[in-house]
Image 1 (cartoon, rainbow, N blue to C red):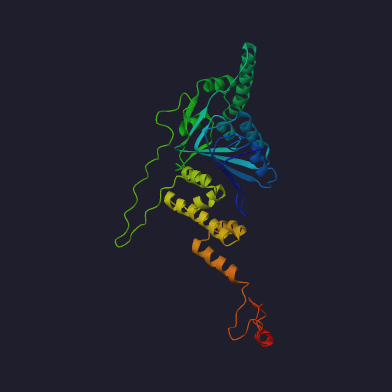
Image 2: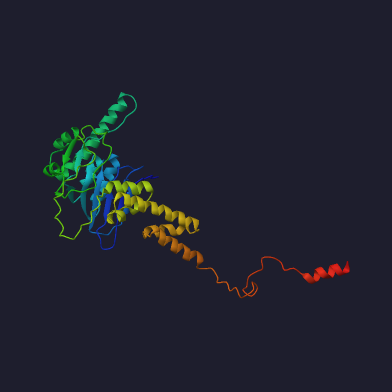
Length: 336
């Protein structure tokens, strides 16, 4: 059973090229699993798929399965490395018919890691298996770069980190794109040759903005960290809203407020006894006040108007208490 805490998103909108966002570890338990990717793309009848990648890697065979699923799909696969493609994530990048890397992104290749337990013979068997896994990974790189297997294995042995320019020169990517603000901020302490200070890619300086004409002001644009916003959405339990929030270009504070409003909407629907309505309100990005008005309309839609000029019986209402029979009371008193 899969227990993905995915930050991965698949967008398949009408008249748009489908996009697969892989912004997490590759893992069948708490990251992006091969099964989750296959389930999304297997029945896609399209000619193009965009894959946007920012991952430090993860489980080797999950990554190889994702690589093969993308390679075997009939669509042209266009991979964009937006922050980091390290370890098995760099193998996934090799599945692209075209591979683009952001100017401030990086790639890393290395030998696979593994653990063994047992006697010396068990250790030797594990080492042999690790060598075979390394060979299969190296083949993915040679297919794109044209380098020899020995050359790529030597680079893997030394845990090689590549800037965008170096990845292009090596043949691992086809072109360099503009810097992307989605910087990699993973814990990279597991790797031995991580570049000094790397973890958040420094943003390239933008050219100075032209001075606006007199009497005209320019509103400041929010600095958007896509990965941080993706984490906020995932931690709040609204990962499915990440793409829409990124498209809205909200600042991190605005994102936090938006996510908090989703919780308010859920509470309002629960209180009004319409819990099933919350998902629709959240999907439509309704404001809290809009939800309050909608719930009020639902609560009052079946109420009947009361005409105070009529008695309860005339209005078809049952009396709340029994009427007092005064005649019976006086009759009993007279008999007494």
